[in-house]
Length: 143
Image: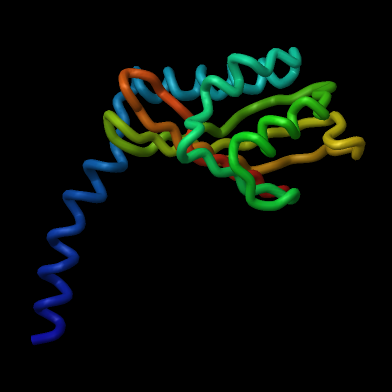
């Protein structure tokens, strides 16, 4: 009886997971370009559009500096200089309103007065809100 209940529950989840995992190629490319643009904003110290792309009511960031919301995380980039960066291995998962974008970033620069370099795994969750894609979550993990 327990096995059949488990199999029934698993059968119900498979279509839901498959539907969420599929992102239209155009949406996937749009999110990848959006993420690349965010990096360029940081490199160019053009932080006004960077901040505008963060959902001020939900945005949370997890990095080696801790867990932060918009004011602290956006301010961190005022003290960031990117000498170089390369983004690759993008994967997008989600639906028409929420996309999880994961990728690899190889970078060198300074952040909060400290030299940073190396390879990092990144994840950003983008959510469509009132017709605009906004970042609601970002995480960084050094390889």
